Image 1 (tube, rainbow, N blue to C red):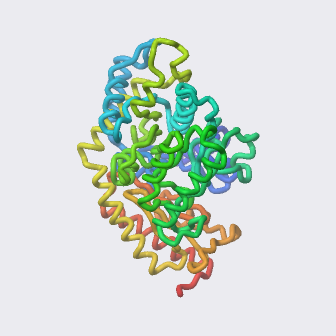
Image 2: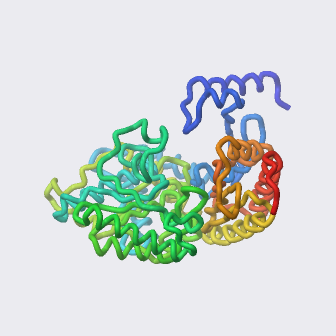
Image 3: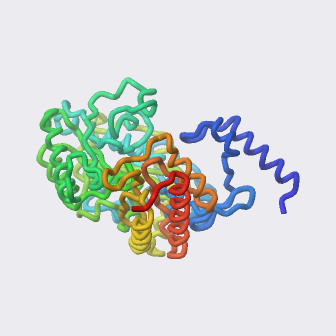
Length: 465
């Protein structure tokens, strides 16, 4: 039982966070009103415990990133041992774990993706991939190629250039940071549920959206376009799994016009969709692959941009003008590399990628059964343990609820009552739990979603057909 001193200490810590901490996409006034932030103290598997002793199920495993689950002391031990022996590295040298990790990634990534530039996270990985793509075009005598194609509503990071990937600015999300970077080209998402071009099947939508990429290249001029960046499975609104035609068509279009294809596997990599890398579902090898999150299950900051051999070779040679002019203090840090090697060992030895495929199919089945029960569910989609629900006011028209209905806020409150950490928007619920999840834990989530939707439907007087 908590003592008065324990309670006072917890409250003092919470107030310190409200007063001094600048959190991701949260306002401190809002947190203060809600008695937040919740302060977590430990975790195991898919569960975390806060400093009041309450146990929660973390439905998204951090930011869809704690792939092996919480509490794996083997990863902590690997980092500790490396830090004891060598915590950093002198200039112009490397370390054993960094070399071993680069070798391991070359072995498990598709095709001839074989050379990694390490960074600290996903935003840096995508920023690096874009810089490599533009620099590569310079190396091969195409200096006019600087434009980057990305897809509306995608998210590729929050740094300089990456802030402007994924669609035109809206509200204060990006307009605070204007003016927009030059050379940004935006195309539509291959989202079968809400196909911008009216495609009635996943295949039709895939073909129309891929053709739109070609049209954009031709409109702007192939000689001006450096690269296209896209997530294999996107999370713009729920989970957009493209039709099978999309990625092979992208590969062919990019090859035809000399445009580099960058796969953003920051979320989808390392087993998230039931294969080690999501592009493997379509047997496509991108020119560059951005990775982070699951590479070390977020136990430490780590990411990377992985290049095909032919791309990397353009930067080889004794002339310094050939080098990639890109330096980051923590690029190639040995401690997260050691943690990553242990993380990958756990992913493979405990067959978590296979578990992602199996549990993902089971999860999807459970959510689809809820679709017959809840009129708010317009669509359920997913691949592996990346699953989502589209929320609608009207299934026939796919009309969304108005902001005044506060659907997301209501659902967050109901999930909290059920000890689920899950923060949906007004239009979707996206879920990506740790890959170690069991059938019983999937059932726990599905039961919680069922109860939360039922209560919100009651509050909003939503009636079944």
